[in-house]
Length: 334
Image (tube, rainbow, N blue to C red; front, top):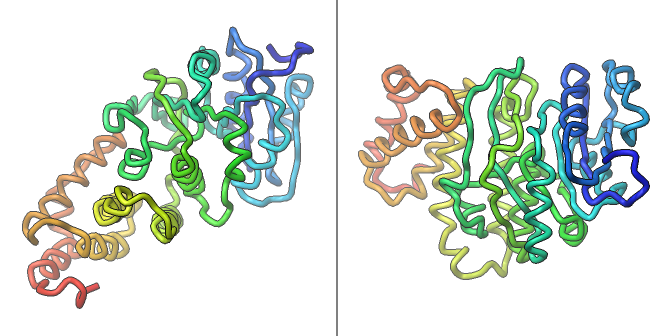
């Protein structure tokens, strides 16, 4: 536990920026962990709210590091350089662990020294902590090979634990890709041969609120597009991965389009579906049906309602359908 003289096995890194409303619950959720050695490192990325005052009661239990605002990638990387543990668990300041999270993941590492990542499930909760949806990503991505990471991208840093030497080996997070730097890191790790395994257990509550990264519609869309572009621009990808490029780009653009629909950016939604059209293996009618089916699935996975009739009646969707129907040469339309 915190306060012992032994070197901690796990370093819990909590990057924070103006999150005084939630950070105490995050720290308390770490302090409630049992049967493991850990340290808590808070990287304050230049907060201007009451974060420092909120943290005062925890001063003897945490390592607090203040830096000028540089973004979450730089904050996490600073935490990695400061960490003493052989295992790294990230926890966003607005999320919180469930009991036994750290011990359960650490036990898998102990049994399988070849692993670089142990991933788990999560529970989406509201800003007040009300349960919204349990997410069991192993049902869609059972193996966590590079192919699964690419196709489904089941990435949530707060639900993951990393072997520190792997993070150091690849150089940590790349600050060029906010807020999708976590996806870029995992793809880079997997491409380098980092092996991953599931802890098939819900271990963390992932808070949904207007300030969270996943509510940043256009930046999230552009960042994820840049990550996929950067990945496939690499010259020496394995042949089987190169063959996945069209299907990965198609699914990525359709997911981004749904996400832009969800965050109320209908014009940009249309533009991303037009990009998806370039990579579709389906006929025009099948493609439009598939888009609607994907939107319904993504909404279900996100725990939100999807109104297909409302979407179908929108001016943007009707114009898009007409565009697809008239499509004769995809390369001329993009």
